[in-house]
Length: 430
Image (cartoon, rainbow, N blue to C red; front, side, top):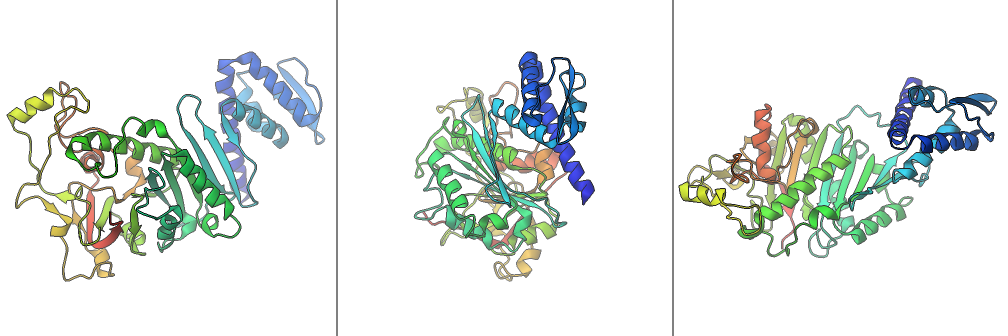
């Protein structure tokens, strides 16, 4: 275990060194002054003005090197823990990164705020390493506001759904993106208020809370209008940007990602473990909403209708705005299949047997979506435009936006999409 602690310390110090070099390139003199003051704070003695000075701290010599060519070596190898802590605090504050004091002996909170964009995030993490050999999972969800959970439901209700999953919670991290600062604050207070009395923080390895309204500020639509054809393109463009941003700013070294819409209210307890053990690349369950046995129609297999010549001309005339012509790629009768067409009626929903019945699909929905993190890291994203039918002369294509463009990209890289028609999650009934 000692070698792990050494490795972690070296990684942290290398990060400090990188920040040093970045700030030195922007303002060398300020960095020299900062380093000198940091050494004084750590050792209690004033350093000399030479490029390499020595000061004593805790009975040891501390080398404070202001030469940019050797600063990396100095930080990683020769500065004491006290000096490093002081230097780190000054650098992070200058970069608008605030590392807070631990909220307990088991947890700490890191806060980042962007200078350029209206964006900030909080990371609540356990003060220990993830030593488990079990698969690690990141669960993510974008939350539009306090009504995003469906009706009277709140964030706490959403969290209770995750607690049903049979997978070891210590191997699960959570990532949430908020449009509302009030909702983010409410969730943060909820998590911290119950830090001693609730198992939430004890269960999960890391929780990331992100506030990035600059993404969704580009488009707004009422909950009742969001499925109208004329606003679907703009809405799904924002959804794609939101999902990509959330994953990019939440994922660390997790093996898998499980994405939920915030108004999903129930999942079978074994679902996550079934998906992992299947070793399939990209997976969705069937999503039920009340009597509607197949709510998420973005999961389908087979061909879809393509534009005719006149419709292609209209697509070519689009200017990437709300008045653009939107082609609706409807199903081909008798050939396009949805999950309601793939249900095996001999298998009970959410039974053990349901976990062994999977069907390959051309497209997946996003209400509940599971995939191997390596796929996203290699460039398969939620496309914020219609990828099918795109050309240089055309603003974008006619199909394959957001979740419906994932499988198209993944197939090029050798990955496949599957659905488990008899594993069923439940959506809030609107």
